[in-house]
Amino acid sequence: MKFLASLLPDALMLAGSAGVSYGAWLIYEPAGYLVAGLLALAAGVMCARVVGK
Image (cartoon, rainbow, N blue to C red):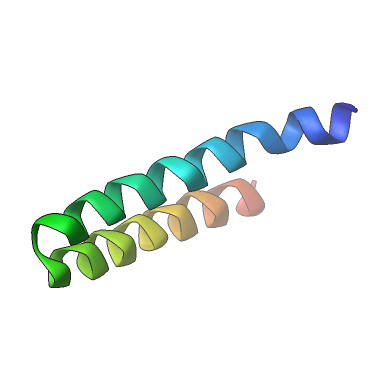
């Protein structure tokens, strides 16, 4: 159960970033891909900082 609780923040961040990307895509299609790429880049930087410590 503790393992599932530790995944909850990551799942929420993934769902939130998907929602933001989809919302941007609804407004203007290329913007959705740009937002998704920027969010993926930010997540990669955050993961690299955590792994590096």
